[in-house]
Image 1: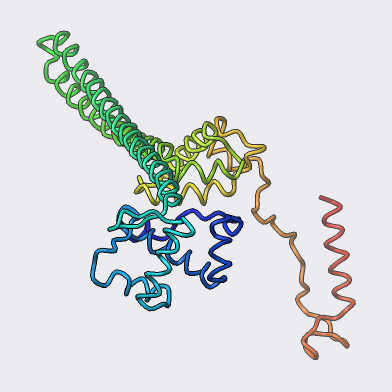
Image 2: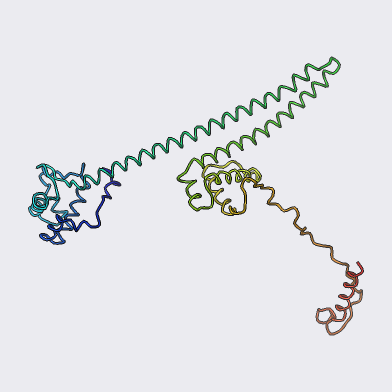
Length: 330
């Protein structure tokens, strides 16, 4: 029996009202009641929930658990079997029928949960394998289509070639092939990125316990809406030129991005990353200042520059009036 399983067994809250336990309390007091539950804990740790009394030190071990001598522990067990009828015995083992029934129900429940977990794991593995197969099929079909496109221009130009135009057409063919190869490389890289992002999306959606449940439990989105938001997130990654991420980084980046989405107003199906840039916003360029005429000989006075390093107040007033007149005339 594993260490994890040895920590639990069912216990009725009104167990003290049982007539058999009332009789035990009347004879041994609540100290005996506590020893009874310590005895059940010992049975819970035993194989098949039965205690073997055929070993030489069986009652010495029980006495240590119950804080009794070996003889007192044997007498207590005998009363629980013969007088209180709380235990059953076959002469070699003793056990509690009530605990056996409770643990049988618990073990069946545990087996049911284990089977459900196994089936869930197989289903997730199947979904991941199907997603990988679809991605591979999509990659192969896109590659074949591009190869056909590369071959078509060569055959057409070779069939239409005339003897006096052979060299020129050869040059055109080479240039077309080079252009098509560059286009093929760009398209294939973009398709690979899209496929890998789609695979990361499908893997995240298939992980119901660790990924889908935390988002759905908040009430902001359901699973279908979460899939649409993941598609919008993939658009954002493509728009920003992000490199394909590992699965863990992909989910963390989505969590940080989704935190600032308003699910009550935004529609993920109409999400456009380029729309976040407002081209109609007013320009931030500074306007050209009006020309200011500074007299060659600055006036002297109480607030002149030569004395207190400040301009004369009358000169500043005149300058202000001049600027105003220039603005009105413009």
